Length: 320
Length: 315
Image (tube, rainbow over the protein chains, first blue to last red):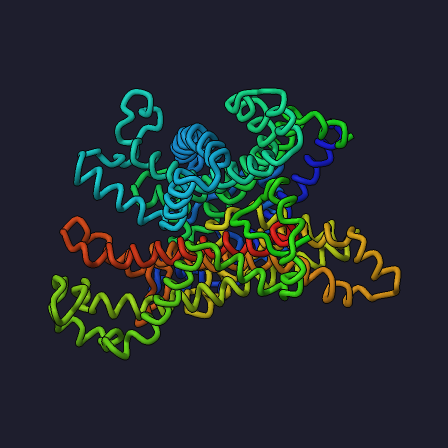
């Protein structure tokens, strides 16, 4: 298990560098040539001297490999992700402001999603092809089909202007307010939970369906276990394997979902900042955030491997 | 063993399989071609049939509807001369939007873009994903390792981040959007197909073919590809739904189809401010049609997965 995890860890580092080179290279394909970024940031009427100064300041006059090396050098040996073109801040400072907001949002809706989706998937599988199964499936498919921004719009229409008057999140919200004044957080968390629900509970349903046809379930039933006990002790535990892998992949998916939700609710988290800086062509910020989320993803996958070893002893042996 | 069991959904119980194992009619149905059995399982799924009917209706509405209900959808200047934000009436069945365009006509016009782009982009993701997955899974060895680590790298960048970055770098035109959704959507598909190829490579008939001296390309074409067809078709269905959803999200961010074209996402996004003003006709009809399209495609995908489930055929 240990050797396996170490190998996975080094593979993750390799993958991280691939992502780094890939995302770093993307802006080089920008049509418009060397001055495109400068013109985007400084405006179409910027004098040539200013554009040249901008290019020199941000190293655009160097060649690609020199810049790539400088970026990697700064990142690895100085922990420096560079400086935003737009807001005269370091990318770290921007991440420091926006990450806590997104973390709370993602964490709470992840907990809610797990608490709702896993039992839902379990009971759907146990009562397969019942009215309950069909109606739950239909509701989940509809939730899957609703674009994130439309869901936010509908939630706002019904719960901010309609039945209740839930306030939207204020600008520059203090993320720790979620413990003292949780009301503005309700709608974004609800939206993120609803969007994640379909994905996770469909996986739970099919994982449990796969488990329910196994021989040990029949054995458990034959020796007189109650249905509840079969589901809770035998089916649930054995369905956890695929679910844990999915959860590892799920985390970045949650951040991706948060992207649109944050933008719709004007909740200034990481996703909001990503969209805003991408639309502003603020490349260093987008690059920095993408790398951060990539680390989250790779970490999530590694964590899933560790958890899988804990839940399923067979893997510990095989992974040696 | 009978080949057709009237089993609606997987997985069938052992008792079911046994009860269909004997009987006179099993000899008769044994000659029914495979695709017919699949079609039959698909048609047993009422929801999937209803979904297919709905999709056909929407495609006809979008592509033939403008012949019956012709409206101006491209001339911004003369559209603005009409009443903007007009409520539904005999002239404009679903009212007009904030630019004065007839909403029903706009749904058809935007639908042409959304459906076509979704289908083409979804097709690209499945073709690229299948090729990549087949090569990785079948060639194996160092090629597989390299291709899979590359895929890991692609997969660990959240799709929306990549999509938005690409669309801001390349000014969106219709073909650029198709390409970008196509080249960002295939990663997960490649992984699924590769898993299939790996599995099939280990199976006895593939090894038998190899032993008889069949070339790699022959084995991929005659054994691996037909046997992963079920997953390819299912994944393709979901890819089309995802492509339409991504296009909608881009439309919301203002990165959708450029004027004078439009798509459902751009339409919903442009009118979203007007919902609070009570102009419901600008949002709800489009939203319902759109969501039901995605739901219908998803149902069809699920039904296809059932239809291709070999376990269902043999028991």
